[in-house]
Length: 370
Image 1 (cartoon, helix red, strand yellow):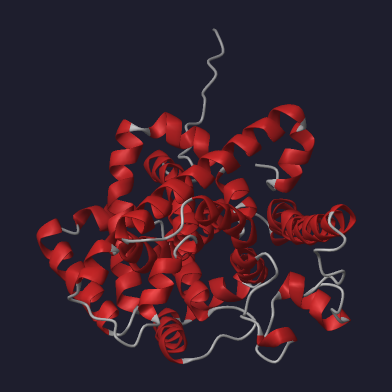
Image 2: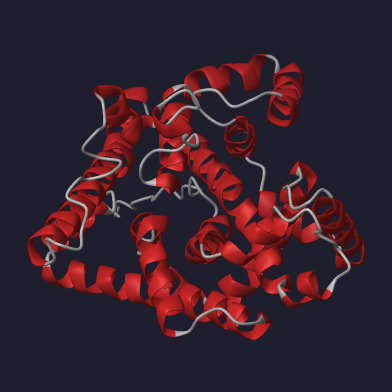
C-alpha cells in the first residue's frame, strides 16, 4: 500500500486581497506626502486672514489644497492602520517582533538623520572652502547645538527645546517612524486593552485624539494604530468595509467635510481624515486590479522616497525652480506643484534604483531591509 502524503492546506496569515491592496497603496501614499511638503502656496493661503472658500485664489490652487487637506493628511494614519494590522496578523513573539522592528525601523531611523546632518555640514564646509568671502563661516542650527538639541534631532523637538521648534525630529517625516516604534513596543498593552475593554479604550482614544495635546507621540497615530490592531486581531477586512461605502453617500460627505475644513481657515478636521482614508482604500482596488505590477515594484522604494525627500532636500529643488522660473501667477504655481513634486519623486526613486544596483547592502540598510 502506497503512503499518501497529506499536505495541510493552511489559510494565509494575511488574505491575498488585503496584501495586494496594501502593496498597491504604499508608493502612492508617499507621493501624496511629497506633494504636500511641496505646498508653500497652500501654507500661504491657510495663514491668510483674507482666506475665502469661494474665491479665484482658492479655485486655482484647488489641486494643492485638495492634496494637502484630503489625500496627504490620510497617508500617515493609513500607514499606521496597515502597520498595526500586519503586526496583529503575524502575531510574532514579542522578542522576535522587536528584533524585526529594530532592523526595519530603528536602523534607518538612526542612519537617515545622521547622514542628513553630515550632508548639510559637508555642504556648508565645502561652500566655506570654495567661497570663503561669501559664506558665513559658522554652521547655524548645528555648531551651537547642545546635547539636548542633538537628542531632539533624533527623538523630536519639543516646544521648550531649541528654537521653539515643531514636534518633529531633524528628518521631519520620521515622527511617523518614532511613533511606530513606540506603538510596536507597547503593542501587548494595546492588545490587552482591545481584548478586555475595547469600547472604553477607543472612547478614551477618541477623546485624546480630538481634544488632548500630543505628548511623546501623536494621539492620532495611536488611534489609527489601535484600529488597525483591532482589525487584524479580529480578522476584519477594512477594504471590504470601505468598498461597501457607496459613492452617492460618500461624495457629499467628503464635500461637506472639505468645505468645513476650508472654512476653518485650512485646519485639517479629524472627520475629513476619516473620509479620505475610506476614499483611498476604495481606490486601492482599481490599482490592485489594473496596475499592480508597477505599483508592487515602486512599493519597494516607498520607504526610501519617504526618507530621502525630507523637506530640506525637496526645498533645494524648489528653490532652484524659483530661481529659474520665478512665481508670477496661478499657472506657474500649478506648474511648480506638479513638475517639481512629481519630478522630485522621479529623481529620488532613480537615486534609489541606482543605489540598489551599485551598493545593494547599503540600500537595504537605509531601506530597513526592504
